[in-house]
Amino acid sequence: MPSELLNSWKEIASYLGRGVRTAQRWERQAGLPVRRLNGKSRSAVLAFPADIDAWLHTQAATQTATQPASAQPANGPVPPAPPNGESRAEDVYDELLRNAQTLEAHVAKLKEQLAIALLESKRANGRLAHRAARRSASGRRSDASRSA
Image (cartoon, rainbow, N blue to C red; front, side, top):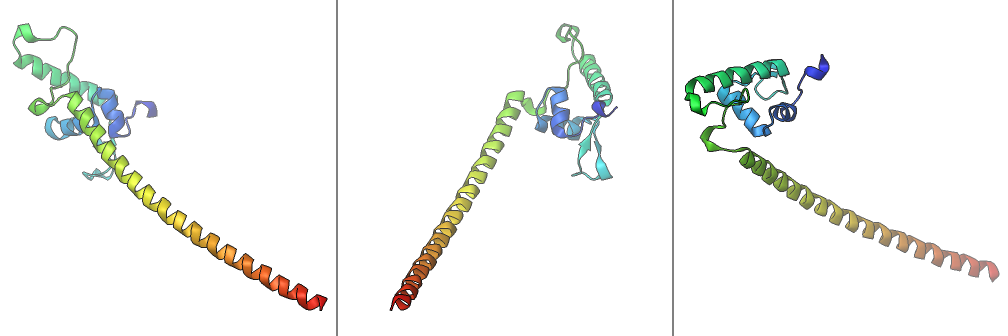
């Protein structure tokens, strides 16, 4: 039974063969059957493939009933067309763009952290060199006082 549960938007979108944003839009606009933990709108989502299959079948039946016979597909249920003419390619492009922006932000943050770490390392090395020089100088004074 657990293998039949889709545990995230990514899994639901993959099951539908669409992008995450499309799946989320279908939930809002077309009633894609997902369940949310705690019943809150921003909670994690769960879905059962059987529920999604039934929803797809209903959507295909609704779409088939509104299309002329010549336009009906011969190969089974078809998920609803994305609204406003958006395509899967646009969803993928949007997701890639968001990922690129996120990566740029992470790279900038990592560069900043690296600069700070290098500065701290130089300071630490300078302190160690200073301590070593002091020890060396005090050691020479001790040797000189012993030999005298």
